[in-house]
Image 1 (cartoon, protein in one colour):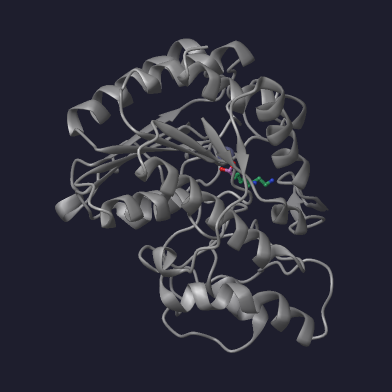
Image 2 (cartoon, protein in one colour):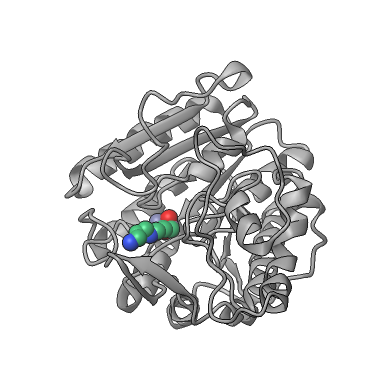
Length: 343
Ligand code: OKP
Ligand code: ZN
């Protein structure tokens, strides 16, 4: 299958994050995408293409316009306010505070448009966000044009980004944008299968009240795992969307035996929905050696994921999300794709 990749992701580098009470270099770093790209080449998965530039119309179908307008202004506003380092939010409009009044200063705007401090900006962050979106859209074009599958090697990832919030390393929800675009191109139903270790809270929020995009999520139980405040099993969708959101929260230590069973169940629900396209939010932070996650999948399990998804027999867009064990991120991510292709 074709891979779409942009070197512009690398401008989003050197950002810092808060881990266990200390500000440290971010886990979501440029080498992640470079190692996956190198593995695609080494495995001979297929051609690696540069993205076509797309305007932000497709992004505006799932994100609020004021949020999209804000993203490219963050770094210029941050610099103009005399600051350096990473732009990181630190105040949020939580329960009891006003979340409906848009503030005027950059520190406040960062909090207004985020749910945590995990989506920081450096000088090249906006260009990287835009390139990641272009990568997803170009790969979606390839699937729309009739190829069985394509791999959007997105960085930064997207599944924690909601209609008007960033967080968890995510800014534009690439998978959600692509799913909506397939709908707008005429697909009656689209499914998003999120296999990243963390719950795709942004994706769930975007489609929660809709029946035309099914969302299935396998992840660490939010009672004890990030992002904590969404992703429970009783969240099944609302209104028109009732019955079209499926969460599979799982405990620390989950291995292939139970994770694979959850995948089977999700695939059965997906098949019953009869989507015309599948968008896979492909995180490989379920890996046993992932430094920020607590599942126990092994490298040999990733091709099994790909084979299970291939058995659905549907056009499939793979969108890169998380995975922080950089030594094995290429083996595991490309393992899913070669498994999908029958390897
Ligand atoms: C993004 B994706 C802080 C832990 C929280 C945020 C994790 C974001 C994961 N010590 N870090 O879903 O892979
Ligand atoms: Zn993750």
